[in-house]
Image 1 (cartoon, rainbow, N blue to C red):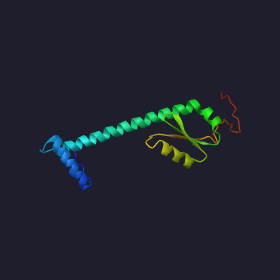
Image 2: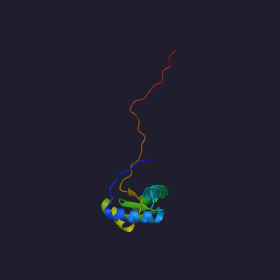
Image 3: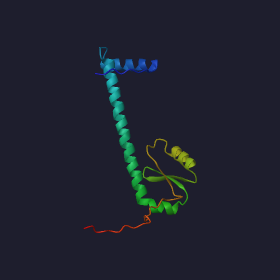
Image 4: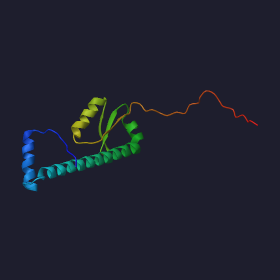
Length: 137
């Protein structure tokens, strides 16, 4: 067993103790049981939240890969936000586009933001010199 110390406001402490006693009885260990249950619930909520965020990320990335050419053609020199696998907002500058998206989707966990003003193209380049194979006997 481990002891965890922390501070909480008095009103939360009183409410927590009252509910813990009602649920687990007025005996020794009732508060510990309630704290353990509360921590386990919090852990499960965090794991579910991470899973939801990962799923949203995968959906957004899939949408982007499938529609990349169309996005660059239809919205040149724009910022695009993709949320829940759809185009959420488009705008001229980054900050206003992000603000509009936050207003439209206040509880969103993952959002993809793209600038179609430029695209980095990978190019192959020579090193400027050549190597010759020499046979050594």
